[in-house]
Image (cartoon, rainbow, N blue to C red; front, side):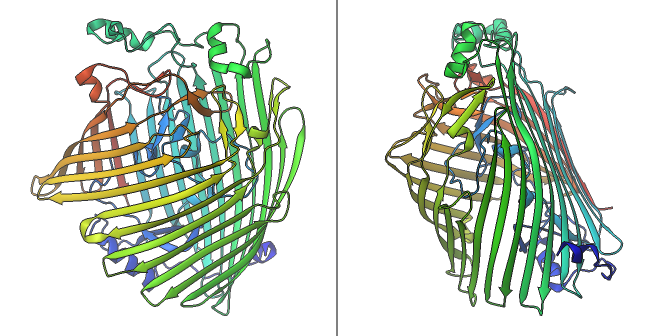
Length: 619
């Protein structure tokens, strides 16, 4: 298949014209966009090439939520600074049977192969975003997207994001870079297309260990009058020699898709991913270091941890695609060499894969996926099914089931620090059963979701930040509700999740909600669109989390955190395809002058002004 790719020279020239399906999708989304009438701008990802979406320049939908982790679906708890280590607020299943190294504290900022957009469009597309913090040049977030067609039916897309955050507390800084580049070529006459993808993720975080035990940030000393300014200069646990995390990985991938006699589909994927996870702290002689590192402080020379990896993935699948029935079977081989600075492990994961799709007229659809591990991951299984019903033109319901069996992460089984073994566990596999349903009522702008699950032998962390395997079942339920209402010039948006565990070993919040109320109107002969509002983030945490910087692990804490109603005051404005927002982050702090924590010992920013601009253009 690779040879076929290299010798496919007879591909047709790109004409800039889309097929009827693409055009219909673009027109359907035109009503809510500000894209010029002659522009067709759609995109898809390799996760599902048939799911084509339109690039919408919508009015203001969540524009002020400039970070993924500030949105409801991807909400996280973090250490306060931009791009800092984070923990998802509500429980999500692992949904994979491959060998997992660990180190997931930067997942929310990371770009994966399935995130890279590929475009179908007839004009060059540019989308630029920039947001400084408090007007300074050392704290900023920049995003950029670009797509362009070239001769010989070639399309290039670039998706870039960079965060530079020096923070406001001592020894606190982050740099995060995520880049995705996609190049694809299509020839509909011979049914062949190929996709080249490059990913780069680089995360550097300086850890101060949080504020010291000698400081009570709730004390009025740090919250009244001019003395309040000393809050950002308070002592932290590792100010002299802060710890530093460095996570870096690069991915190179090639996907070939072939269509034989319209119905038979062939696909080949090959990729190489390599990188490392590092942590270092050379000064560990104080009591504060002991309180941060706990039992991980095993060598007086300091803490040094390095884990290097290289991973090859090779997958082939064959599919039958008809008007109402899809079937695909395949085999995926993943070889990984993993070095923890003492030894190298060679892992050969092998998955049998089956996918099925069935459409029953316009009433129902079935989607299913099965993966079975037969290599180093033998005994692992993933079964994911969804059954959807179109109850009416504006109401639909879908039921889903997930069965998953997987191995512990490598850093949960063995960890090497400064060439010494901290622990060597022999954990068994984890089993999970998850059943749920989603009801969407379009006229009411209402989404309701309920999930019930059972975890058998999950891995958790104790209060010394050491992994252990729970020797019984954990039952949990999750209920979500999202609703939007707009009347005349007043808008109201509410999204809430409730989750309950028979044993909350993960110390996750019981309730999390985002509530947004705003006023919206047009000015200057309807050329300027304006929106002013306030957002409330509501957390109900019965248990609290501490943080271990060595492995980026969040673990249950004995310490308490006062409840805090975090708010943001914002204003959005838009002229044509240019948008700007102004917001006062942590507006609550201006009213009650008290600190806000999401993780024990790591204060969030005090009230701070932020602005952001976004400009989309098509030439």
